[in-house]
Image 1 (cartoon, rainbow, N blue to C red):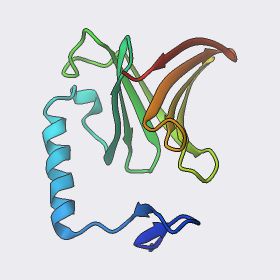
Image 2 (tube, rainbow, N blue to C red; image 1 turned 60 degrees about the vertical axis):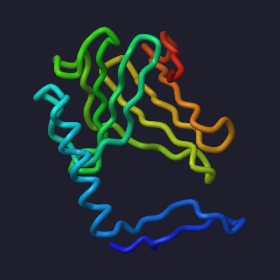
Image 3 (cartoon, one colour; image 1 turned 30 degrees about the vertical axis):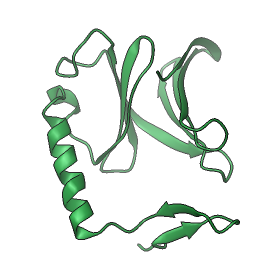
Length: 144
């Protein structure tokens, strides 16, 4: 499927480049293979890594799976990613907020909802995690 090699916004600025040269594809695969060496066996399978970030208390990794769903894995900051993650959530969704590129990743685990926000328009590279239990926010931590 072709979605256009280059996307421009209304001001003529580049908003996305969808083309990947053969050399770029090799580099992406090499990076993926290198990152797998530092992951617990339970989270080594993924299509593409999307987020690697740390908050005050957690190291968070979000990966796109082969079926295009998202997987959330979190470790306490004092743990190695070679250890089993404290929490793994599957079948998350990426949700865009408006046309400026801001988006969030949403994962649900029974009464809990984990939302990882990525702000592109506004404060550049502003990311944070919110956790809700029964629609009450119980955690909000900015990426450090």
